[in-house]
Amino acid sequence: MNQRAKDLGMNDTTFVNCCGLDVEGHMTTAFDVALMSRELITRYPQIHNYCTIWMENITHVTRKGSSEFGLTNTNKLIRQYPYATGLKTGSTSQAKYCVSATAEKGGMKLIAVIMAAPDHKVRFRDATALLNYGFGKCQVYKDENKDRLPNMAIQGGTEDSSPLAYESDFSYLDVTGSDLSSITKELLLPESAEAPVKKGQTAGKVVYKLNKKEIGSVNILFEKSVKKALFKDYFLKVLEDFLLC
Image 1 (cartoon, one colour):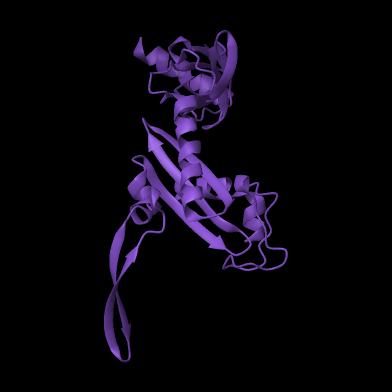
Image 2 (tube, rainbow, N blue to C red):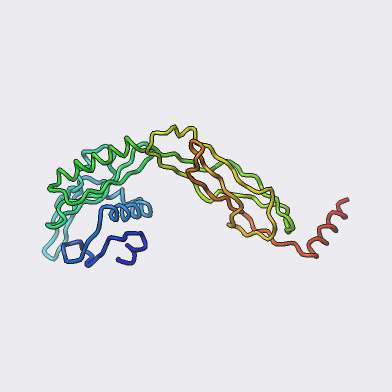
């Protein structure tokens, strides 16, 4: 657990047990809980299917028979906050009342972490205030990069060109209230590349700017490998062209 936390950048977290109960040296921070929550909802988004259930009947089976009882979600935001999507509450005598609250509005997902609240009402009130602030202050620009890219000419290769592809989508979080429709997209590609090139190798990049200031970029990759041409490749090419004449 501690190694995984370190891998996620949770630099102020130390796990002493796996249950979360109070024990000397067992500690974390709101920022680290946010990192852990982001990893969970990003890698396993199906968690929202479970943590948004408000009430559920559970059948408990023992040797003496079975009995049914009801469980109610301890995250009251599921009922109280219209954009809530989860995630986890917790409380101990030392940590007091805590919550990692996730919410989504207009395609933007936020995480608000409250720790050491004096009671459960305060933790939900403060989480709501943070989420409302985030939705009011933040806006997200997204580009799925689905526009067609030109093929790149390959010099000295067994093929004349290679198709290109974006490495990923692009997203930008703004908290200044800027006009995101003014974001520009500039394609930076050389006219050609020397063989050999490998599939997945960087060919160039696309740069995004807001008010003439760069706000991010996405690499453009070769979609196909092209080997360096040898003498026999040139000979076969000349022979092919001669036979087609």
